[in-house]
Amino acid sequence: MQSAETDYRVITQEYAKGAINAAILINGGAAVAVLSQMANLLPMISSCSLAIAVLFFAFGVLSGLCAWTVGFLSTRYADRSLRKQEPDFALSDRYLVLGLICIVGCGVCFLFGVIVLAVGFIRP
Image 1 (spheres, rainbow, N blue to C red):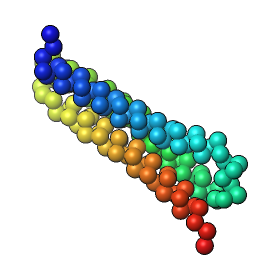
Image 2 (image 1 turned 120 degrees about the horizontal axis):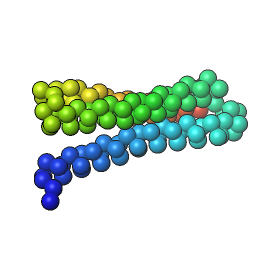
Image 3 (image 1 turned 135 degrees about the vertical axis):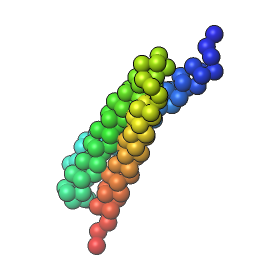
């Protein structure tokens, strides 16, 4: 039987994986959607706006990949701390905070990409 601490850790890791997957999926999906509709969008919006939006989505995917990497490192150092190979959880906690920053970065990149597209449709 698992302990409550183990259950909490498993649940936390599942939520983290879900957040990372969602962040990569929304940014990657948005980039693919824009690129697949490029010919239809060019008469309505400038190519510069499209390029900037795709760049934001690409940085969102990159930020998601970074979140996955630092999430792995956070878990790794938490395991090392539990096995007394690290003095405390300080390094694991730093990676955790960095991972959260990366996930927020994914959301910000998606938001900015969508805003660039929306503003690009505004004709003076």
